[in-house]
Length: 222
Image 1 (tube, rainbow, N blue to C red):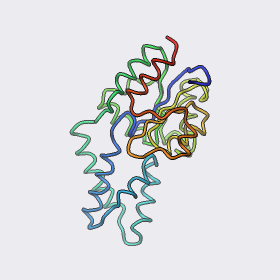
Image 2: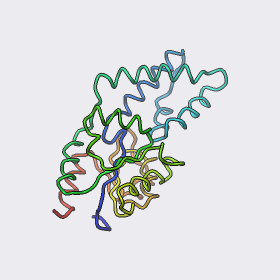
Image 3: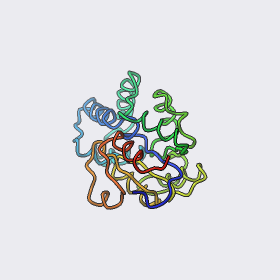
């Protein structure tokens, strides 16, 4: 299954470990409605895996002159904050997968387009922050996903070559970054269907994290 010995595992966060994407989409559409606008679902989907500052530019361009991104962001932040304060939804199978990898002695890292503050908040509330030896975020690199920089940075922090790491991703944008870094990528789709290009770039497409656990149990030596 794996073309090289596995020495570490790199995780995306949003939509893979934490079920945030649906919350973000709901918050985006609620913020638009609060301003008397509509935000098409397809446009929301186009921002999955994209760093927040770039999404801000996409939103401003979408609505054009006269649109207040500051007001929109205030509505978005308030809606998302209320949702997350009610509980950070951990993806099914995440804890079991992390337990398995810990027991195998594999070092783990986060490689995300989110900010370091967002990672600390979400993973901290979920009780998962201390599972990871390294955390690489958009704050640590010049170019975020789909560029490979954040994966290179996560591997660097682990002290392991990126090509010796499994990468787990839920989005096509993230998969492109993981592949460009030379990792052994597995895609676990969340909201978006994998493109043909993504399927060609990853070693496997898994239905969910439980399927990833089953795969790794059968392929990684004890």
